Amino acid sequence: MKFTLQQIAQLIGGEVQGDASLEVDKLGKIDEPNLPKSICFLANPKYENYLYTTNATAVIINRSFQPKKEINSALIVVDDAYSAFTRLLKEYEKIKNALYLNQKKGIEQPSFVSPQAQVGEGAYIGAFAYVSAGCKIGKNVKIYPQAYIGENVSIGDNSIIYAGAKIYVDTQIGQNCIIHSGAVIGADGFGFAPQADGSYDNIPQLGNVILEDNVSIGANTTIDRATMGSTIIRKGTKLDNLIQVGHNAEIGENTVIAAQAGISGSTKIGKNCMVGGQVGFAGHLKIADNTKIGAQSGLNTDIKDSGSVIIGSPAFEVKGFMKSWIIFRRLPDLQKRIEQLEKKN
Image (cartoon, rainbow, N blue to C red):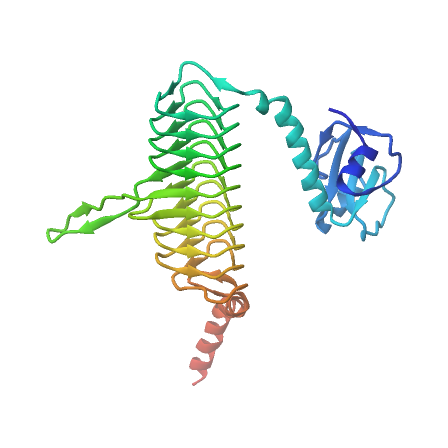
């Protein structure tokens, strides 16, 4: 697929500096060594040096950027290079899907679709997939090979279930959701009652999982069903790979959580939050809207103020953490000084 720089500029609301008739057929990263016929972008200043050496046909840059050296590539100037390139990626994905993904329709064999399941128009069910009784599969849903869809699961229009994902009984999935390979949605919550003899008795997990519209679930992420009621992932939320969400947890809309985070049961995370990798949440916490949590933080108390930025284990406000870290790094030196003072006395 080839596009002229003028076509791309019109698409992303930019202006071409250079030959607007030049064509590109690939998207690239500015730090890659060989980018002929490619277009890339510069948004992070630490990559500026690559701008002067790249052989990319064109680079998308911020309108406010002032180059320090001569640039060999044509430029497309925009207000926000990162957002513009993201829009370009989305358009490329649409074209790619139109050529490949959207052509997948019908039910491949061998597979099993229960006679008591409803399958919407334009849906695709891949080979060795299993769709149980009572399922409602929406229009243009894509269920890839070896996926398992349990009893009474509903999947909204245009959602994608990639190969090997497992969707347990009664799960509700909204429209335009993406569930990547190896994800398990609706397994038992971790509920066991201690007994007098030291053993543990299983607590039945009778609830379900609800994913609202436009939710993305990464590969090998697990979301446990509720003991009673629902574990809920609100609309627009994006979960990375290898995340554990416990029973009866709730994650607010448009929240993003990076890989290997663990969310214990009944914790409620607000909307528009950003959670770094390997963050751990104790159970029954409440996290305010717009909270930002640094990687490897450990939370054992509520976050009550919207817009908080926290880090550390146990986690606390970032400015206080940085001041404490400065002192922590100086502890060996402070110890030596104390020992020297003790010797003098």
